[in-house]
Amino acid sequence: MKRLTFVVCLMLLGFATLFAKGEAEITFEKTSHNFGTFSEENPVVTCVFKFKNTGDVPLVIHQAVASCGCTVPEFTKEPIKPGESGELKVTYNGAGRFPGQFRKTVTVHSNAENDLVRLYIRGEMTEKDIDLQEALEKASEEAKKLEEGVKVEEKE
Image (cartoon, rainbow, N blue to C red; front, top):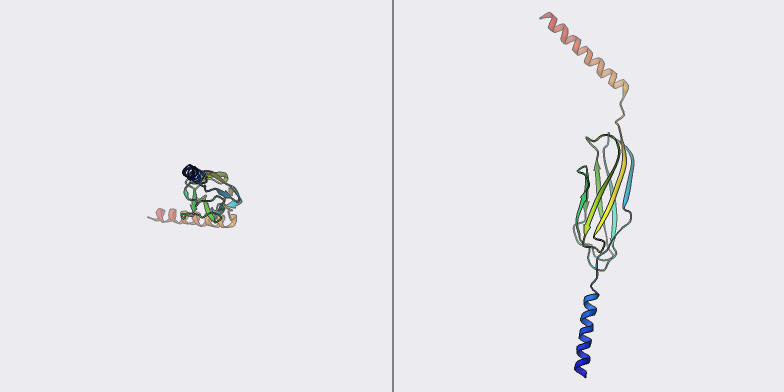
């Protein structure tokens, strides 16, 4: 009888250990960021998404993939212990892109129970401000150079 009780207790302990296996869980403070309006003169903008491991085993981010090459995510590579926090930095580079509104996605893959999380960034890049007086002066200088070039050719 004692053996049977001992075996049953061992089995229950084994099952409890199997089912008590915890999981990591990633919880972001926010999942979207609006850069608002910014100029094409300064086309690089950055934001930080803060997260916490609300699970009970270490959290490992395997990868963060942006929907476009103009968006670069950087994330904490070390495992995040339960209760600790980490950051995922997202940089949007609008250089060489047409001004206007944009919306990009960063997909985060991890060992968490919620193993796939999507983060969103958006904003509007406006055209460079043109200094009209400066543009007119440059055009005038170019016109003078062209006239001088024509006069030199006529003398030859």
